[in-house]
Image (tube, rainbow, N blue to C red; front, side, top):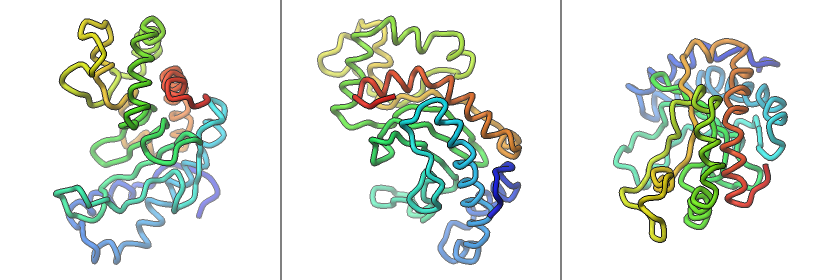
Amino acid sequence: MPDTFSGLPADYFDFFNELKTNNNREWFGDNKARFRTSVQEPLALLVEAVAPRLRRISKHFNADPRLNGGSVFRIYKDMRFSKDKTPYKTHGAIQFRHMLGKSAHAPGFYVHLAPDEIVCGGGIWHPPSPQLLNIRTAIRENPKEWQNIIGNDVFTGRFDALRGDGITRPPRGFDENDPHIKDIMRKSFFAMQDCLPADTQKPGFADDLEGVFQDAAPLMKFLCKAVDAPF
């Protein structure tokens, strides 16, 4: 494996484009070595490159380059609750997870790398009910701080809007007239920037990610404080 990240290889996206039409164990078995050299190893090198940059933002997030059990998500799908029984994800992804988190539901910085969608940023995905209530309460009780985060020029200049799926009615105990009720109704909270494939294929992509993560840091700090995690 090369010593430093020099950009994702062109075959990274070719691999996933071909996997979309050959999403079966036989094809994957025939291309497993290619998966390692074109997908796993470049993503691990990206994790290594981001690690020192992430420490400049916060020391409480893990950048683990191990090919199994590290920051790079597994390609194998959890098919227990899915109608789609194809066995493999058709994208690569990295989560720089909070050191206190043991699952994807913890606060984290995230990179999603698919041929048709490349996004990066930070937030929290479907936190458990107690943590979700804490986040909603923090937004209600700190409206000026919340507005300063999602409404400042750096945030709006970098991210199109706060993202995250939500519910259709205000949660119990919250006023539908709250100025931030739309955000209170969310089940996930993410600030994400869209990227182009060419962005990922240059050595400076790790620097780009540092800039994105830095601009997402105020949101991450707010979320961490709400769920009682250090930032």
